[in-house]
Image 1 (tube, rainbow, N blue to C red):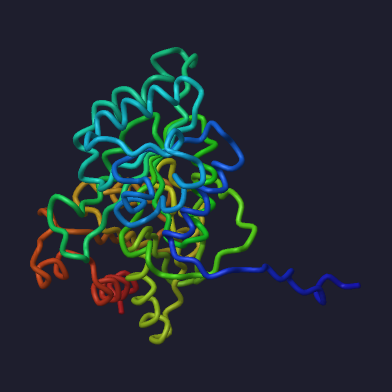
Image 2: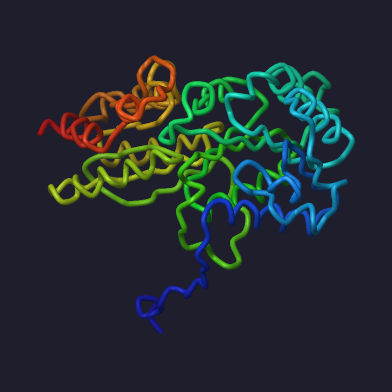
Length: 339
């Protein structure tokens, strides 16, 4: 029988939002391995299961020795998690909001990320750091910053920002089994949008981007909740007859150079869009790499869109102006295409 007549296998799916997908990953990992622990502020069921309910149900099932609600001390959370990881456990530590990682930067950067290197490979730190951030909900300047570039600049720690619930489950499963520290940044609005998740969703490799939509005129690279904005812009570009290839980066460090560069070489144009500040943001690294590797092959300079160089505003109109919006993406895409 010709393979042309074979149908693709049907994948059974279930609707989940990001909260449910992360919860399912944690539940599955804890059931499979008694060394997996969860710790953070207010994560037990009698305290609501975390700030947005991700850990709901875990303490009732696994007990408070494996699901530990901690004092309000990010340094204590990270110190305990690093010690547990070095002792052979696989802790998943929640830092409630990404801005609060600043309180524990010494623990994360000088200890978790460097202990394997400084011990000559004798010490592993199989640690997952969960944290939440993202503008758009008027939580203002001390609660909504994207600092992924800080951690991507730190050797020894992987940085993951999933978009879809399926990716959240798969990347969490991979991160928990990783022998080195992984920080997973949960991007605000992505946690509340239901999407199809394969019933048997397994681990997704860290460091592998996803080509969400194939195209031929322009490559747009993004990640996290900014993917929603990109997809809105792509609808308008598609309606105008522009063929856009959309790449969801998923992992910021190590980022998938092969997929991004292959796509940019194919389309001849590259636009990077992220919520983090444009100045010194991840888009700068991607753009510089593309210019170096694809010099002479691109039809236009690499485009970059990101937040302005300021704190996240509280006022709704200012916050909307701070965030990249679909019309800006459309306008930049048309500029790169010289339309």
